[in-house]
Length: 282
Image 1: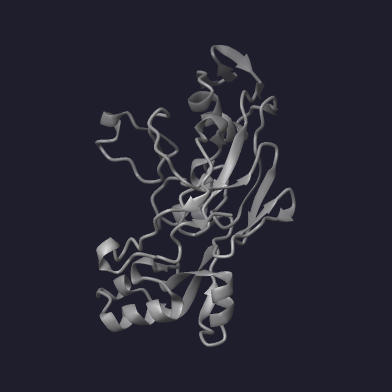
Image 2: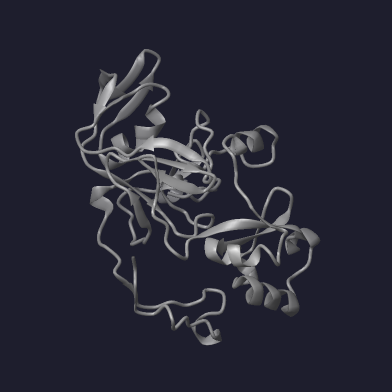
């Protein structure tokens, strides 16, 4: 699943859309590594970027990153110029980032991905660095004010939900045997489970919801589901965008990093990160 506006070639390759979310056929898979942060039956919620599972703050990887706004420092594309070598070196030496990793907030300030520990060590010398978080309702407001495309890229990709990647849920992770109520509000949560992952037909009619031609008010979940999130929390396409990951899509467990290359420098441009190679994954 992707979160972008559909183009004319998408239908030719079998992609479809629901509320602007681009979906491709479920049998087209590739290996994709994300951290499993919640298992079947867990209740998750993201509050100002912090993940809570069953009401408790979730374990955090030591190098997990969030975006921070660098107030008063506009992003270069706003200025209509490219980064020069002095600027690039400044961000790499002080913030350990390539300028290609920098983003922009609503005030057009630069955003920088930093671990909590690095932020703590920097904030005294760089008081312009402040946390940046999208509150619930952010995308609804953006669409209402014509500031972004009219599609909902945060799961469940439906205008009834005002969640963002930084403030999300609460949401229960389905487990096999759960009987869930189906109505206009809950159906977006379970639509892809019912159709793409568990192979049923689904229709919404004036008089109710039909599965495989039968009118229903509940549905029994047929397999376990999981919730995946990346450690670079503001630069990760994960379950906040795709939704639940079915058990039959999980193919293995990552044990160690066998190769690590800075994508902006490349293997032959000094981008080999030797310290990370063959290191274990917690």
